[in-house]
Length: 220
Image (cartoon, rainbow, N blue to C red; front, side, top):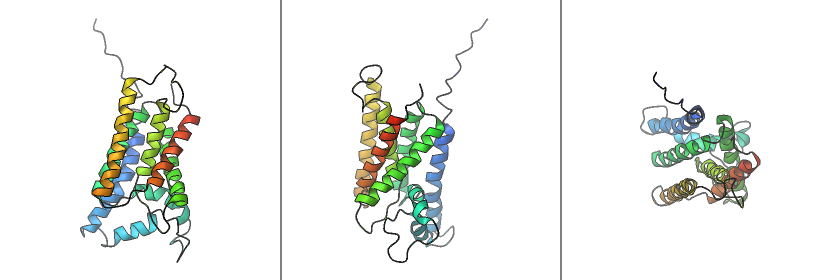
């Protein structure tokens, strides 16, 4: 009698739909805008229109006001799925894939999506409070810093002692790798893209993700 190999753990793949969904929502807008920029899809001003309608604009009530009803609410989400170009998109997409896989090893897919969106809101709130007047913001990095906060909390870095004692070395290495990737994304954004880094959003996202993770323990 031949022995069958052990069945794969459902945790490894059960959350892929959530990660694929967020990646699709992150990739698709910029890819369409790239086609528009090249004159292959829609008007050439489509990118400007997308930023006008979807970017996070704390001072939206100044001047002409919102361009459509509830824009002051929808912009808390739409800004996180818009980017300034392919490099900006690639940096954030890679970060989402890497951090998402780490978190989905401990979190249910629905919780993962909720934590991502709530971090996106928290990042925007802090940017609105501490950011420079008249500035707008796009990009998923605030939500990614929220995932970073979630992972740090789940790895036990905000508690005196994790359930197994000290955090396991692989967790330390992964956290260090995630930290390096996020810092690198900031450096590339500043030096290569020439766009200022919204550190206020990064801080807001990180704190939001960490706090939410601490009050909603991961699955065991």
